[in-house]
Image (cartoon, rainbow, N blue to C red; front, side):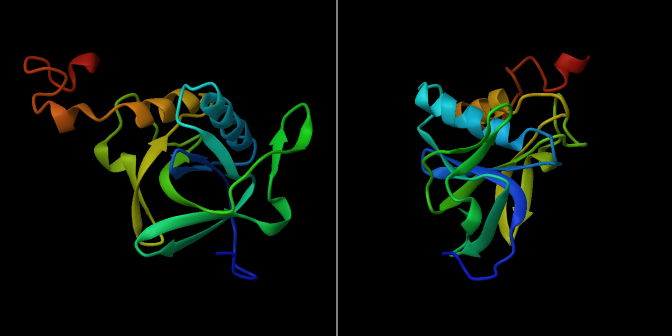
Length: 169
């Protein structure tokens, strides 16, 4: 998949199960930390098996209606672990992106608007998880992997008598 001279984005990616979680955010927001947390959670059985795609610089390209991610050539199999430095770990050479996590997202909210939970990259619509600054993305990613929006199963909201806004009333 690697194309010589293809541009990269400042992001990390981890394949969880059969699709990658693309982790974006400003420098110092915790992209590498979340990537490693996902790998640990996969090894601990909290989420499906997880393996690094790449850390810090990721190539992205649409192919057959799916967005694919792969590591920058010079960074394959490397991840930054704050306090230990750059470390080697197992990785996959490419993976289809299934989720986008935006760390330190200005539009992160307790009850997010439905439109903030989707993003289109390179013509591919993907689920998006906006994470507020200072919060760990791991619980949100784990919840997204293990649950479904209430609206899909429960037309009345949380239950037939409680609407979606009851938590804020």
